[in-house]
Length: 272
Image (cartoon, rainbow, N blue to C red):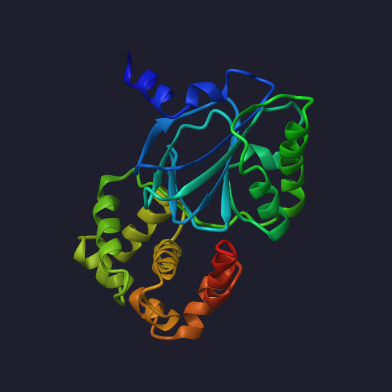
């Protein structure tokens, strides 16, 4: 049996596309820390509870925190990396129809509101193919239908994967020093670039500036620390390089659409 066939057998992936017209439903604890690279014809809606899930495609690394879901269009190669074996993954796989809303054609991470949360939890005991014409299919299809109406903000909870080997070293350095004040001029000098050439490298390879990249990376780390609940909001701010809590809170709000304290309150709802 080939590695891909082994993967398909192990992770139910082969079953997803057996019935082209069904909606496939799968809820389960991860049990391990990696689902290797794979793809399926159906589009995937992945919602997680109990931890953080990293989803890596050929071009981007997505960061899926609690109370959010990721939409992955059909045919996109991706791997899944939860931060804990105890993460609960709720998956709905939808067939692709012609002339659909453009929403369904793009990868994205979206906050899940109370309506969508209750609808997802309603599917809790379903697993396997939901046949077209059945009650459960209609309910699941309603979840898909309302997404373009209520998911208006595709959150920037992803970072492009560097193609230039020189950036790998720089990004590794940034990851190890998220709590430090890093001046762009010092970064360029440390790695043997002029400021102008390093600026161009970030823009050309990653499609964003150093400041944009570093800011998003810091906030992603802040979300991880908040979910661990070992540090206060003030301590988290300092751990990712913010001496001012209001500045940290404002930056967090710009990226996630809510304040750090409000985000934590939303997570608590899942436990009630």
